[in-house]
Image (cartoon, rainbow, N blue to C red; front, side, top):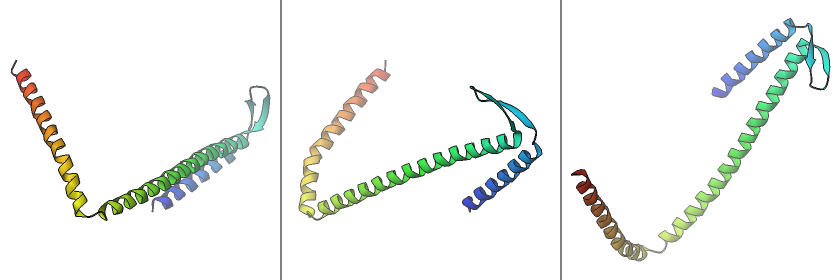
Length: 127
């Protein structure tokens, strides 16, 4: 639905730009840094609109390409993680118990560290 509204808004903008360009048909002087030329204002308006559309379209294409590349890399990463997770789950419950036993002392040391920091903070608060 959003794409339809974007298309409708683009068509309305193009119609208004076309009407504005047709109304302004007088010749104007344009300074191109190295030369000065006389061109109809209608060509200047339509040319600038075309250049702006090309710039915006190029940016959109670049952004779409970048998102597709990132999506592809993330899909590869998910597949890699799924394969790693499935290999760990196939090891069995004994490996899980062993890893739990090895990390338990680390958790106790971490808890002791947090408690000692809290004690230090409480003594500072009482000053």
